[in-house]
Amino acid sequence: MTDLLKKLPKLKISPKIYRELPENAGIYVFFNKSLPIYIGKAINLKRRVSSYFDLDLGIKTSRMVKEAQTLSFIKVSSELEALLLEAKLIRLYMPKYNVAAKDDKHPLYIQITKEKYPRVITVRKVDLNKDNSIANYGPFPSSGNVRSVLKLIRRIFPFADHKLGKRGCLYSHIGLCDPCPNIVEMTNDKLVITNSRKRYLKNIKSIKAILDGKIEKLQKDLVKEMKKASANQNFEEAARLRDQIEKIEYITRPRIPTEYYVQNPNLYEDIRNKELNELKDVLVDCKLKIVNLERIECFDVAHLAGTNATASMVTFINGEKEKTFYRHFRIRQKKGGSDIDSLKEVIKRRITHLDDSWGKPDLIIVDGGVGQVNAFNNVLSGYKVNIPVIGISKNPDKLIVGDGKIKIKGNALHLISRLRDEAHRFARSYHHKLVSKNLLG
Image (tube, rainbow, N blue to C red; front, side, top):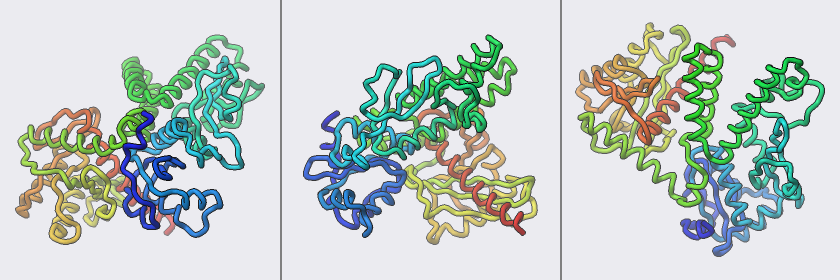
């Protein structure tokens, strides 16, 4: 493990080095010879590294850049993974420019206390040896990083960062401390206290699972609970659990323990290749003529009761987002509330750009069922265009190939889900823009 950074390819430092970096989340490492001198995280590696070559750098940052000779990076799949991987590598290598924290303070850790209602707090290294914690996570090189981690988690699993008091805390009013230990302890009903404390401790257990990288097991447990609640007609609880599952998927997809990145810095690329190969195998088994899957396009529509109808086209190249090929469509035909009619319009407009800078996809995915897939296929065949089309339906996730439905799981599902979610997000963003524009007159 300690030889990890030696194995990473190293790029020679230059003002244009950022051009060689991807626009992905990840961590980057500045080296002096073979010695790591600074480790940082980024939501967008290319943009973050480019900022180190601005003219107005601080004294310490400027000194670090001048001292650095090479740079390496590891791509990950989410901001949370980047934050946790950065903390793990800093603890492992202790680079001097990370250790020399701002104002010479000790780096911060996340600590879960050992109390009746465990608190989730931040502490300095000097306080870690006190025997009042269940677990410690870090170090994080800045308070901003710690806040980023806790902000992501707290929206999913509320927690308290205060000691017991005599009235509800501020965060209890906005659902970020729920149940609030103060409010629970003021209750005279012992059964309410018992159930509320049990729910609070369950949140703490879930937070630990996320910080420990045991996210897949956590999700499976939540799914079981959701199904049980639904079977018992406790639909409010089932909906709450469903929301937690979706939020966890959003901040961590795909679910990869931080430790895996430490063992294999090329894991990100390996996963993408595996996703593409598994999807190709599925499609070939379905008798689709797939030569390669270098370019995949996914389409979705969005509207509000037929008004302000929009559609999106997102493009993935070799399993990665390629936003230069993203396109929005404002639906022109009058049946804006009909997804199928809207998609027919979109594919007709898309066909006119197959031979220009838009390019031609190897596969088209449409968010929908048999009707949506047939709409695309009918238009394409009418224009004598041969591009395979599949659909993706939810609950449970299935591929629509022709008139058949195929169960899909594993890496192939991860890729399809990312395409669908991105197409949905992109369609909704344009739809909301049009709605806002109309509301403002």
